[in-house]
Image 1 (cartoon, rainbow, N blue to C red):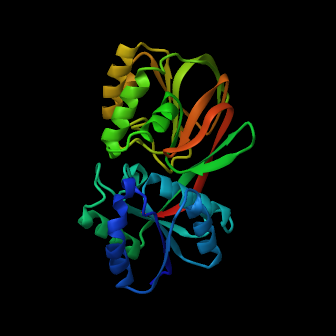
Image 2 (image 1 turned 90 degrees about the horizontal axis):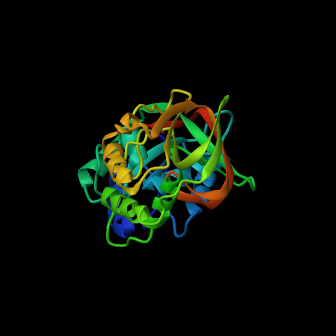
Length: 311
């Protein structure tokens, strides 16, 4: 039986995750003792995961959504030993979107926190211990503030959508992000001029949105990079040029299906390193968490095979 530390976020899924705590303890505790820690503030899961590494836990399980998972991943990298995270990452998807857990085969489709069978299945996967080594990303801004991410970074329109989604209190998951997209369209429609470097390729053009993806989807079900694989050693990059509001609506439908590459205003590319410069500044999210509200310079690098995950 591996030593398991569960880092539980009771605020996940607008607080609805709280009711799952007794069941998770029962399902994992039935096979042996588990360590348990609950977060009480943003960023605390980073500290708890790093401490779990120091305490020698074999598995550190993120019980929450994509934001909780990202914090745990950052903690594992801070406390890493050698070339990979110091502990294996486990996933108990009880957040709003759970896109990373879906990518790892732990959360099928768009699911709800209170589906106990799916959460119990995730706990069972942790006990079975089948693992996969995946790539990670690292993003840094002009002040050298850096963060690791497992799924994807959204720059520009995408970043504003993430900020807007936090103002919506009564909705969750895919519907919440869809409403946030529609709201953002009302006032964020002018693409600032950006200078981009994708490995050796250089591009300078008005860029409304730039998604740098390790996984296929985020935002609870928007397929920003349908061809992406988390262990192929490259990011999939989606660039959207200046478009009209009507064209934005068309693109919204395409992103829901992952067919946006058919639109002439969309470029799909691949790279291991992406540099973005924009004098006007971009809003940026990493794995659905706000990274910056007005970043003028960003460097995003791929770190191959850096994290072991239970799948």
